[in-house]
Length: 482
Image (tube, rainbow, N blue to C red; front, top):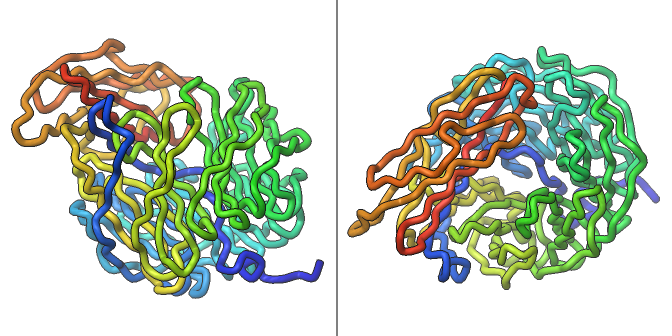
């Protein structure tokens, strides 16, 4: 077919799902009543560059608060908005990228403890690396040639050398490119692996339980998602395709039915649905089940427990003219309820979730392509108590221990006992003590032991609280292993 700009093919602009989000999940409510409602306050808009596409979260100035990085497709910049900790953000600071930035990933690519940015530039056919200073500032970009039209970027250690690598979905070439990191912020020559037609979104997960990261890639023209199994040495096998809705774009990876196996959520632009594909744990997936979203679901899927029942929910921006974001509450069985919509700015494209005001509730950040702004929607759901942390992210070296203080934030009139359960040992991170702690205090402390062989990069570890009346809260901490 004739070459076109990707944005014209999908009516708006195209930014598929970013696999790496550094977020803290807050949760709440009573176990027998949660899952029924969720609410967000009216939006507050903050200016970005022109044509904001994808938003990613990270603590860029090392103050323990989640900041925003927004790729601006029309101004060839990425905007950094530093958080105030009360739900607000400062005036943006712009840094140059390549032409037509469509996707941004956040990680520490040079091992200095500061978060960096990887930006996929669709029209520039490059990937820009911007190294962070840890103060909210970034250095001048370094570009790496990728080939035709990279539209999505994901991060993982694909060859097991302890250095973070990149996976890029390239729309024109029907391939996903792997660029192996050197650990200094640079990357080696790319290797291409086949996908379906029009690869749009890419995400990383271990789908067959062999300990090696695999890839899930959506195919816009194929109405499929391709699974490529990693060999742990930086190479991937031939794609196996599974059906989705029409014109799939972003893909998210999580365990939606609680069976310990990774599942997929795919937003379908052409059918106004999100497809859930439940994983078998052996690299396969069951036939899709579709759930309705708003018209033209956007370019990122936010996953988190928005109503505190301990079950993962979904949020997608709706790129139609009604200017809304949809929230679909999960049942914990792989099914989701009817959407609830909340107002955004003009032509919302992507949504990310994090606790922006420190109340332990998961809020939303939505990029608005038409109004050059990001909308912040604070979670106003009524909580009995929440769990939280002093900082949503901690950094630790492999082979060390890190002290984690879990705060118990009680509502007025509630002073009861809360039992806090630490995360199960996984991926080389073990809690000490390993058993639940019951307390009437405002804080409880655990230590996380990082094994010497723990994979580098971000790990999500979840603490869960329950009071004597059956109310539940959970909070997930991002541990960045270096």
